[in-house]
Length: 218
Ligand code: GRF
Image 1 (cartoon, rainbow, N blue to C red):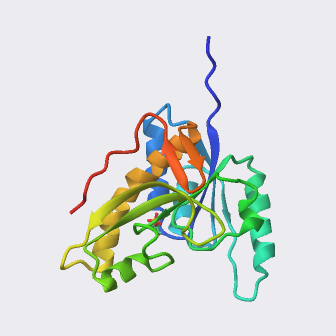
Image 2 (spheres, protein in one colour; image 1 turned 90 degrees about the horizontal axis):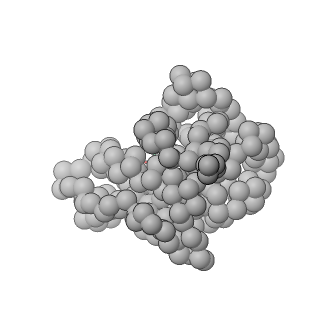
């Protein structure tokens, strides 16, 4: 009888409300073939809503705040050690608002995934939605990518457009982008964990099944 591979052990890092974490957990619950389980949720702030969501589900959490003046390298090294202690295979940045360098990333080469609320390479950084709106673009969207040492830069796993409405606020536009992230991030993590992604330099190719369907969200 063929034996199936054990689920990939995921760490999810959050800074905010954790709706992307919730979407990932729901997708894992829904799909017995997802191929992953969340074994720890970390945050850079004690009050991150994502930590409460994890606690509610009995998932171990760790809060590692970084105060100004703290040694960043030491903070990253500790975060890495704390996550490694959970024997994690893939790290998902789901609204984690800290830059991670090789000190952390070297532990999981091509195995750290981020979701970003713009169509990269446009509007990198922490204010992507506000900047897209201020620039007057008609279409923005979201990008799920592998993390490298440059901010919002690594090989792109999936992207999907979202139309900007004339009367959008940053909040209304971000909500529609998040609706897409909630589908694209779990699909991308599942593909990575199931070995369906081939990474060739900047290019990520999906083996069958194809990437999640592309739709425009008005
Ligand atoms: C997402 O839009 C993510 O792309 C951005 O922060 C947001 C996090 O939302 N970096 P949530 O905490 O998952 O609700």
